[in-house]
Length: 162
Ligand code: SF4
Image 1: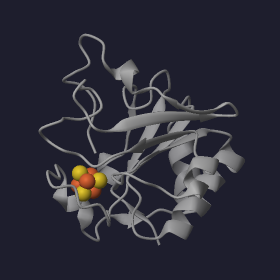
Image 2: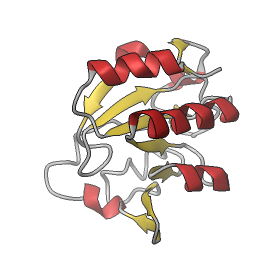
Image 3: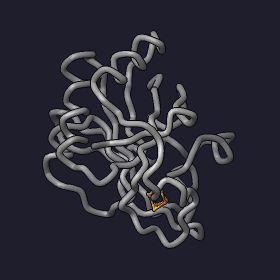
């Protein structure tokens, strides 16, 4: 089972460059970032994310062209099932913000955008040039590191971190 935090669900412009993104915060985070900024996301909170919930979220947020899983939870198979559902049934691009440094090959094969790397407060989130985190765009040509697209004036204090 995968759970998300409904109150944190929002349409965002900064998390995936060039996309109108519906961002879903997944709880039960299995990450262990030393400087975790959202420790409540490690708890078993929120509501179950299902295909029916995804249908309703997409319908309620007409105009989005990307669906972002902010975190992975602890049920990898369900994450992959639901991500595949979004892609195949709703024809949206899909992204994953992982707190892990390494992710499974299946994730690289399925997702269009993948963020890797734990959050380290001294290095900052994606919007800081000092960040250790990386956002990749995966296309038929391979993985492109697009982290530098966050580093333009004015964005440093915007957006969410995970
Ligand atoms: S991925 Fe996010 S929620 Fe999970 S441990 Fe790291 S900072 Fe905390």
